[in-house]
Image (cartoon, rainbow, N blue to C red):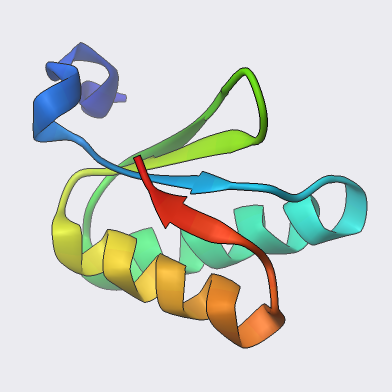
Length: 77
């Protein structure tokens, strides 16, 4: 994906604290949100949690709102 080649400061990142079925649910939501916004996304490991990386802030904000709606902890990174 092109996003992996971008410097970290150009990516919009949400740090999520989820595992198992919650993480599977969020992967599906991230894919849906990225498709709706016509952007790439990927997920990386963090020391604690997972990093959901999007190409633009609008997609990341939509993802953060989705996390809130599911009651899953998410913060900007």
